[in-house]
Image 1 (spheres, rainbow, N blue to C red):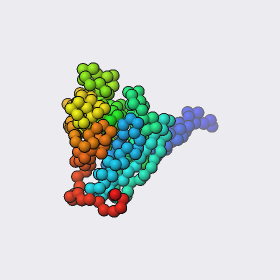
Image 2: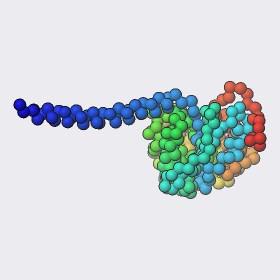
Image 3: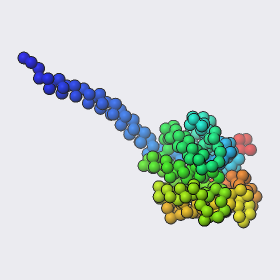
Image 4: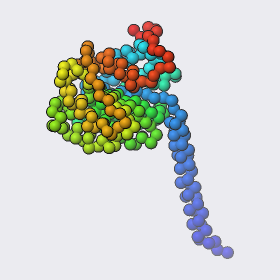
Length: 288
C-alpha cells in the first residue's frame, strides 16, 4: 500500500510551523514580561544632557546643591557616549532612590546643527540602554544650552518609538539657543525652521519650562534672549504647558546658569517630586 505523498507534505508543514511557533512563543513571553516590568516600575529618573564642550561632570555642583536639602539623596549615573555609539557607565542607583539623576554626555560635544543631530542619535542609543537596564515607564528631561536642542530633536524624531510605554512628563531647558546666536527672530535658522516644521510630533501632554539667563536685558552673555524665547514657536499651543522664565542676579550668565539659585529652586519646584515632609538640610560628610 503506497503512502499518500500529500501526507508527508502535511507532516513537514506541521513541523515547520512548530519550529516557527516555539521561538515566537518565548519572544512574546519575554516581551510581555518586559511590558509588565515597565508598568510596575516606580522609578522616575531625571535625565540630564549638558551643552556643547561640556562633559558628564557638568552638573556636579547643581546636583550637590539639590542634595543638600532633600530627605532622600538622589543617586547619580553618568553615561559617556563615544563617536562609535559605545556607552561607558559610571555610578549606580540606590535601592531606595526612585528619582535618580542620569547624565548623558558625548565624546563629540561640538556645536552646530549637524552635531546636534548626531548627539540626538547617540542620546537615543543611551536611552534605549537605560530602558533595558532600569525598566522605568516615565522620566523628566533637563538640558542646558545645546542640551535642550538635543532633547528637542530627540523628541521630534525618536520619542515616538517609546511613547506607547514610556512617558516623558516634563522638559526643562536652560539657556537653550533655539535660533542659535541669531538675535532677530525674523531670521530663522534652518534648525529653528525644522523644529517648527516637526512640532506636531511633540507629545501633547508634555509640560515644558524654558529658563533664560538675564545677565543684561538682551542676553545671558552668550545666547540672545530672543533665541531662547524662540522656543515658544516650537512648544506653545502644541504641548500641554509652555512656561518661560528669566533668572537674574548672581550667576545669571550662560556658563554659570546651572549653579544659579533660582534655577536650582525651579528644578526643585517643577521637575522633582514634592517631598511628603518639609525639606531639611541633609546630614553627613558627603554633603559638604
